[in-house]
Every structure is written in C-alpha cells, then in structure tokens.
Length: 129
Image (cartoon, one colour):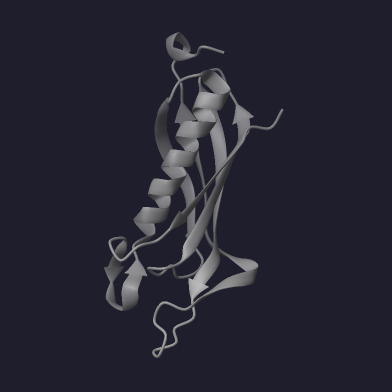
C-alpha cells in the first residue's frame, strides 16, 4: 500500500520575504515537513524525525496570494528509515491586475514549483504499527 499525504495552503503577505511578494523557498520546505509528519503518523503512528533532503529543485516562483498544494509519498521503507518524495504545485494565482489587486485565477494546469526528496527516521521503539 502506498502512503501519501496532501496539504493545500494560501501563501499570505506574511509568507512573502522578498520584493514583489515573492515567498521564500524555505516556506515550501516547511510544508513538506508537515506532509512528512503526516506520512510518518500514517505509516508508524509516530511523528518521527526528518533526517535530510537529498534533492531540492526550485522550479518556479511562489507569491503571496498563490494557493500551493504540497504532496508527498513514502517510496521506500527501511528498518527505521522512510524515503519520501515531495511535489509542490501552484493551483491558484493572483492575476496581477493593478486595477483589481485581489483578482485571482484558478490555473487550468497546475504549475510545479518545487520538487524534493529526503529521508525520515522513526526509531524502532517509537513505531506503533
């Protein structure tokens, strides 16, 4: 059985870190951490620990007002390690219309903005499943 998780979040002005409302890539990695936690709870009944990312690709910009979906799945289960893959995609974005600054659009095709993979660990004595 494949274990998967998904979160949808709107990026706020609070998330914007750079000029033009650009969101720091670390914010997306934070979402991946939340997805990983849910995956570990589903798999082992414990939050576990994120050990390391082995790959992170920032593929497109994320701005305040964007809706981001973060997906994750466990791709390999070891004795205590859990290998995971993550994808974040933009599904809604502001139109950029200066006359209507709150105007937004649902994207017909989501735009992949970040891909990553990494490893988490759940010590044997914490595994409840």
